[in-house]
Length: 210
Image (cartoon, rainbow, N blue to C red; front, top):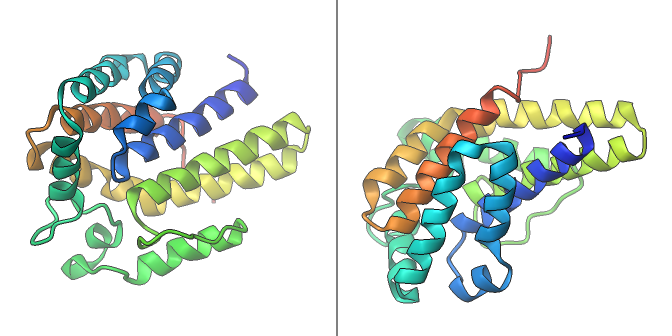
């Protein structure tokens, strides 16, 4: 697989992973073939996680929409307790602080990349952060396609800093919380898939040299 193709596939994978952490819309998942596409990408990028994408699809087919939405709410919304808080600052800052300093730092990264977040969620929501990583990979693939090596290098460094500082540090705790916070097969399989994908990516996302 050539470098440009790999970068684009990584962009697509992060985007589909992000979709799985938003409030579920099973009909849209089916219409957009989210799991078929994710399975195809994962097979190329992280083969050991392919079985988990298949399990996610099977769970979606077996359960009704309400059960999936309830499981999502219990994990990520509440109302009384966030079993698996999807916000980075609640892991990175003392007192599980929401909308903390790290949240504002994440927002600065988005704005530096020319993005404004237009959703009713704090900008360090897991899905938004994954979409941002997807965006950076996509821009890097395009820069390489355009033979703009300097821009591609700058984007790669920006992505690496963002992942190392604001994403990877809280992923193990978040994944464990998802797995322990639900019995729903879809989200347990998602946790397993995401964990394998994150571990695989650790070997690809090296910290930038000082």
